[in-house]
Each structure stands twice: as structure tokens, then as C-alpha cells.
Length: 132
Image (cartoon, rainbow, N blue to C red):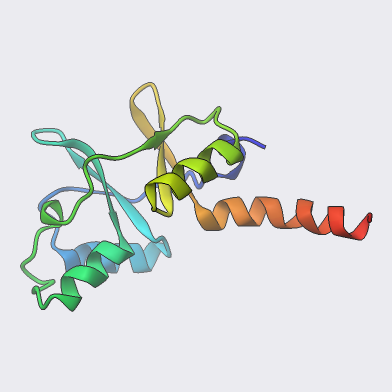
């Protein structure tokens, strides 16, 4: 199975000047664990995850004034839609993260998460167990 088959095509895109509270509210409303941060004047494409928001709040930073760009990961590992789920899982395990932005021709077209991969693999694993 390929990344294009597992990825979510509903991509929450925010700007670098959104506050952490705004980002968290949008992520919560969309029920996603990550947002793509587009900064055309700066770092380009980055990612803000629920863990980034949690860490900032845990450090006592004010989510009403703290900008997302201060917490965005900019050295992002991107996936191609043609990657296998094994390649995506290997990249996540190697990098220690749970989300990959999927790029096609330099544009974000989706996000694949550990949860997406598990959802795809679980029925396959279950069928293998039942057949043995």
C-alpha cells in the first residue's frame, strides 16, 4: 500500500503568525494532530504538531501571544505519494516523529500519520493472523 492510499487529504494550513491558541483551536475543530505552516517569506513549509503546542504550554508560554513560527519544525522530512507505507513508517521511526507532510511537485497534498498507517495495516495483520 502507498502513502497516497493512507494519507489524509484534509490538510490544515496556517500561517507563521497564528498564535498557538488559534492553531490549537483549528486543529481541535478539524480533529487533526498537525498543521502545515506555510511561510512564503521565511522558512517555506513547516509543521506544527499537538506536541509542539503542549510543550510550549508546559513551559509556561502564553498560547494567546506565542506565534506558531517560534514552535514550527522547519527541517521537515517530506513523503512522496508514491512511497510505500513501510518507507513512511521507517522515516517516522528514524526521525522520531508521527506525521509526514506529503508533497507533490513541491506542494503539500496531504499528511500521513502513524494512526493512518496503523489503520491500513491492522486489517491486513488481522487477516494474516486469521489465515494461520
